[in-house]
Image 1 (cartoon, rainbow, N blue to C red):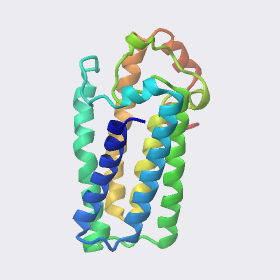
Image 2 (image 1 turned 180 degrees about the vertical axis):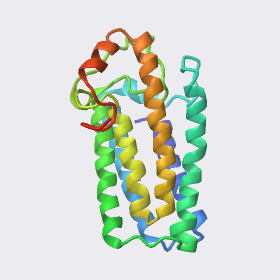
Image 3 (image 1 turned 90 degrees about the horizontal axis):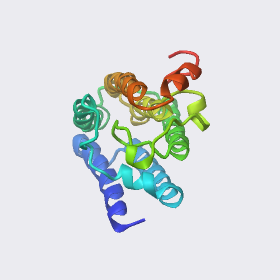
Length: 225
């Protein structure tokens, strides 16, 4: 990987840590350290795998969050998510780290830590199967985008988003913040909305997607939705 990729990766995780510990007002927050180790280790592993197996996708995912080819609705949703995500981290830092509004059992925090790793594994499977898994909603005509139906895409139509939803659910449990769970519902609703709008875009502009959607019934959760 290039130095720019390493810098972006470590800077992102550093900002996450700064937001959490800054809001908490202390470094003595074991759950946050566990989360930071897990998120840093898993994102490094995911990025190294992309650099080795799919450098074109890694280059795509290094592009800015607003792009010329991006679907109009995503030009609204993406900045909204980018604003709400750090606010969510700050909320959990204030709750679990500074004011201790929540009382989450240790066993639930441990479950959150394990579930977080599961979420990152789902994301890894999606990225490994789909070289067109760009961070923004667009049709990659320059890369010959086509429908992906293998791997986790044979189970749900948006496995990447499914992994993100598990991520949102696991982090506040690990950190010990019920308020974070409430925030996760808001973020999850926006991701679900993005999935619906993205499907409209793909159905209209990507050949074969309508047939794929008819074959794979569920968007995010098998046997549910």
